[in-house]
Length: 365
Image (cartoon, rainbow, N blue to C red):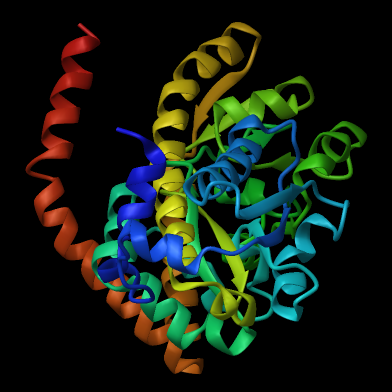
């Protein structure tokens, strides 16, 4: 099937709550030249993430016969990596590709579009966003007041726990640890005595190499290998409990989005949804061989000790409760996601979990 015809024909309007599907003739009637800029928080060297942005832009262009063009810029070409969402809110650029969680300093609820700590896995997060009204709720309750709209643009799948220069054997080893980790997970580690630091992707390796930080988490084997983190921190920990999934987002300036022809809005949302699913498939294909190469090159896989996971879990729940009491919006979204998690696992433990667990045990024989 021609991808342009697919994108022109319909959009996931019911899930997104923002656009009505339009047939191809409507696109022809509304067609006009539009040029946008998209600033990325992720450098070209990270082919999966950079490819998500450029692939999305290509889909939009192809579906509109080149009439809606989106030019993708690297971090620093227009604005620094961690300022992408703010620049989009201000209208300095029309759109950006970043992690919503980078903006938790503005509002802790920005974390929810990326992940729920100790929360949903990749499929559950996608289900909540697309089928349970999550995208619409986040845009209405949270992003609207910051003059942006947010749509998923890639799912990374479950992430690793990061690279450490020394072993983590107990919660005591977290005290004083200078750890590159952002979002609310950084706040959890801070409560446990660590020193969290939010550093852009391109600055992680030199910070580890110089000893400015003791540990760093990024995404998973494929991207971590690209950054070369295994060369300066040998211990590779799992699981990344703070990111049972990682949804990275397309932010668009609300006014610029409203100015688009309705058909272009529909195509933009459909292209973003397609890119999100394709990105997860790509990570699932690329991470296994990357992990084998890392281990062959000397990376030492380590599970976080149960005692570390337990104190992190307990502290995370306390933090959720505190933010829920302080902010009704945070509380509403957290309770909804937590309830969906409970419901979803009742099903997944009978299906996915039971099947995967058997397969894993059998293949180890």
